[in-house]
Length: 191
Image: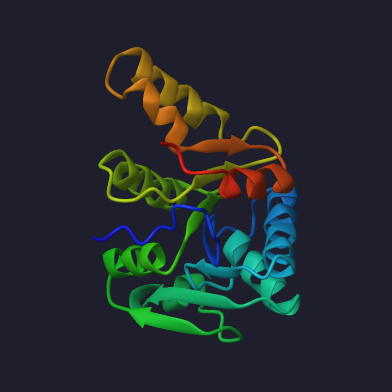
């Protein structure tokens, strides 16, 4: 895996990891919609899991409706569950590994909106690759109601118990507004 991340943080494409649930809090669905619009307004391509449901569907539909470029990556076996969003370009793949690798390769930064175990798994793998120095791309968690606070408490616990170096804090950001999220993605790469 080659690190294709730009050192100066020139952003062209942003991967968004988020939930596929339609039955979650309306505030989370609204955040995904507003984030999709914000990506389009900034001329940034959305790279995402390809589904038409939940936060991921809302984000993609909003980005496309606002004139933004969108690329979905969908495993064949999830077509029925996550209902591929035919209104945007997408690539069909066979495995989750292929999905995540293409999403990684096609993106200059990663944003993690509220989601379940699948979202968490994608985010943790991206952080793991960052910890192994396989990339220097920004990883930013965004929630307006401290949804991700327990995860960051756990991360701090791994630092406190000397399982993760304290320097890893610079590899990930936790933001509570869309504006702060974009600022974190655009910040200079840590040296």
